[in-house]
Image (cartoon, rainbow, N blue to C red; front, side, top):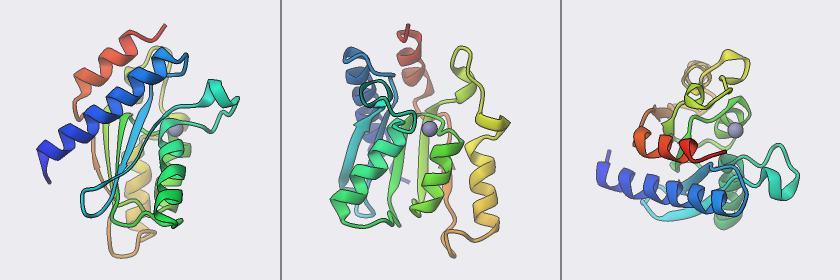
Length: 158
Ligand SMILES: [Zn+2]
């Protein structure tokens, strides 16, 4: 695990979340990095702009990454996201075969928010790994990465 690279990519996700906030969107940024460490997609939440409840930062980034790689599967890719993925995003993460997820703030850090159905992404991924939904490559989750920096985003969110 390259911590310097993790910092660089999470900072990019934070920068995307900041630009979301400046554009009246919810401050959730997400970045997809390819197996060779190259940037594939950097996006943010578009729920308000697109009137689309499914346009979470992670989903927007995964859609962009699929188009960029011309592949439904993102095997070997890492997703950096400023907040713990919800259950919907967790399902998409499993469906597209992402190999690693790095997140900043926890869902329970957000005012008035809890994990969807009380399930944390770690539990969803643990189940997927047990069922071998990702073949022999388990999905790994790195929680609380640059959590304080991510929490600053949510402190600024009205
Ligand atoms: Zn989500």
